[in-house]
Length: 290
Image (cartoon, rainbow, N blue to C red; front, side, top):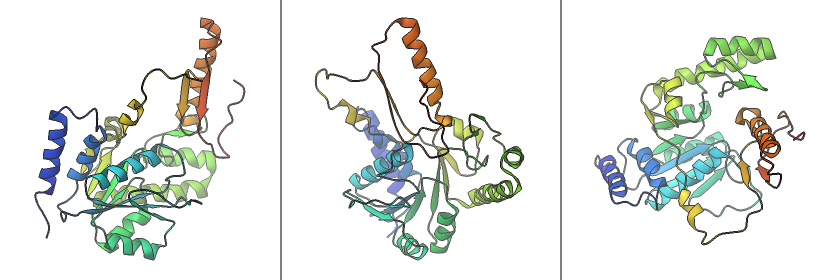
């Protein structure tokens, strides 16, 4: 039986966590409770699908957010299944189910067995299948996939337009007619679909401001920061600065390298060390000259 009190109970739990001073111990509950409280009334044993293209063993922000969401939703007593397109050579050992590279038929079956679908990255396949399965769909916006073709407002080593038509014209000049028409069609398809999403979640106030949408709320991505407080005492460190993320130009890695070079030259602290951890695709520039 559907419980109309579920959202109220989750908001009460959220308020209790904050007012009880436990937010430092369980900071991820802030975003998790807000995520679930924004969903429709569902059975008390709610079952969710988190669909994302990239997931473990791939490394990145989307992967970390999805893992944190799935783990904490499971801890809160709800069912959770992650569906991803990322393969893995090793068996999955998570407290939640993981389905990898499933067919459209299998994905539809999974949707009908769950109550709510949460799409961490915007997918028109996920949108169409959720409509066939008649399940509410939540889109999480970590970029600008409804504003521009590249979703980040960045191309190669410089900024790109962040409005639809300007973005299409820009890529018409940069990559040709076929690419501009194909990606422009995808862009406007996503914009049309956003009007039929149960809830749009903006990952930051800036995204919500630059990309105002129907049925939109702003919720920061959850991260389990308490995992960094487990060390006792002072540990010997090998590096003084650490970058962890994708090695692509829009992340500003080149700015970090230039700044680090200036730090070494102007402060006389040549003993400082910088570690860069991440991966790049074949089209990403290589940062070897620093």
